[in-house]
Length: 109
Image (cartoon, rainbow, N blue to C red):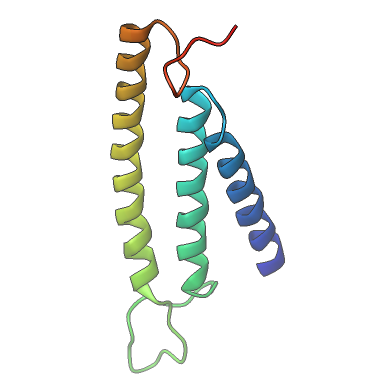
């Protein structure tokens, strides 16, 4: 299970970096979104993958799930949603003002 999730994190990171280095704004937005997904998944996996364990320590529980990574991921999801919405509005505004969606604002032939 850990190998599969590690591969998924690697693919998301590689795709996010590739799309972030593109010359147009929409692939950059998708790349940033994929990078945030990779970071969220990485943070979630850092809390150890446990199934059926309680998130709160009780007297009868021998193992427990760490609730801190889950709280961090929930916060990161909200922040990445706001960041993605801001970058989409910013790229739409730049497209309407400049007439193209190139990152540097120059029209390529």
